[in-house]
Length: 380
Image 1 (cartoon, helix red, strand yellow):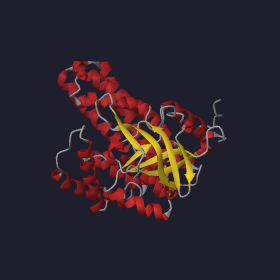
Image 2 (tube, rainbow, N blue to C red):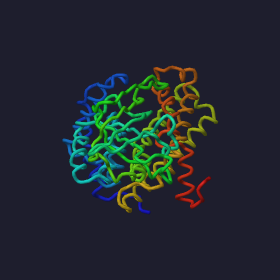
Image 3 (tube, rainbow, N blue to C red):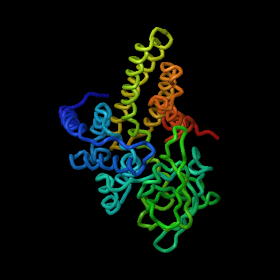
Image 4 (cartoon, rainbow, N blue to C red):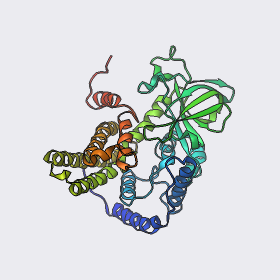
């Protein structure tokens, strides 16, 4: 497979670099990680700049290769990440672009691209995390509305969101055979009566996740994406984006951190340890391979219509473990400083612990690889 870039793609890269060079020095200071209203304003302001410069639609109305170039160059330049916008830009937005009706695309996509509206993700539940098909948040029809009751957990950015990509059960688990056929994908307005949001504090002290309680929340049937009881298929589209391209910028960031670790080790004397040098060398090879795998996945998505495939699970499985290994190496380089929560690498190490769970656990990814790529039988 040809992984080189065309002249048009390289021209896109050059134009983006020039724009970033001019705009980044003018950005305001980034708010505190604890100031979520401030972070929302900062992140949506950055998205508006991208929109006005013609880069707003790159996350779904561009070729997968252009999207890869965009994520690579913005990370290299130290540009803001999508932040509070990540569900709308990387999950819900691409899903609606792929599966929504023309009216739904017209209603929901432009505000996300302009930075006017923020989305959160309401998938996991206290008893339905890895086994998402076991979710029990119910939705029943009442005329032109669904009435939703239940609870969600790990709801990303619920505190500052305008909309929620919500999975509900429209057929009880006892009646749905198999159980994933009773699930429906809804777009729920976060200002609807009956929604209670309680922030969850992470190991690092941040509150980007929340628990959400739903008490007979009314959601218009027109806000359903896909058919009733077809939400599992729609969700697989969402998760393919989450596992396929959403981590691209982070691979670039990890390669940058690896270089910083080597420089730090040379400065504090730990570079003299041959075991550490071997470890950093192996990680360099690991992230180089992951970058090539990313390029392959993007090329394959471009060839097959733009939606990342099961190769995204191969990437996510290995990347989540490699990221943890990277920050374990960072702790070795820092020594006693690895216990200092004021160190960026320390906070990143705590965050890395979640990567083998987020976007589908490593065990789930192994099942996907075994069944969909290797053709092995389903486990019992």
